[in-house]
Length: 138
Image 1: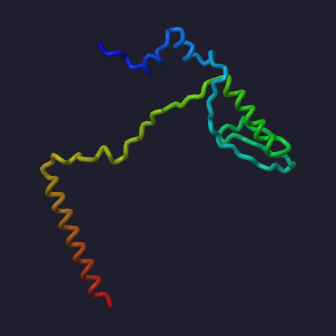
Image 2 (image 1 turned 120 degrees about the vertical axis):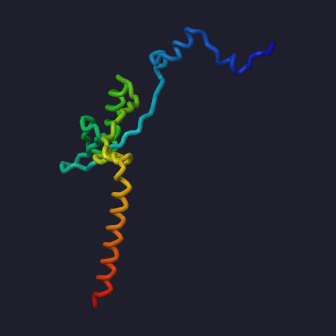
Image 3 (image 1 turned 30 degrees about the vertical axis):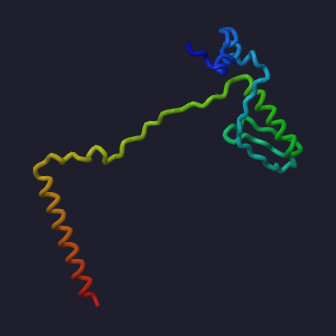
């Protein structure tokens, strides 16, 4: 009987160990990083504002740039530690092109080929008339 790979054996865990590994509360030092774009702006009163773009409720005013960034970072860390950050995919239906419903509507018509031939003939006559008019222009 073949023996199991020793790497696999070392990764096996008891059910209680697996539950602890999946429970974030059992890892109080577990951290995640989230990159956010912020706007740093010098205000007219001499203070510096730091605002998370797209989240105007996360805005701080401080006397200098460094403390504004630090305060905003602390404010965000506190807010994010009380919840969960996750990506949400939303399916957006694209509206049908307004002419899409007309595509192919005459494909089985007996007159369709004759209409196409008529269009081609008219186009050829138009091109010939245009060419003649250009030749006669001084």
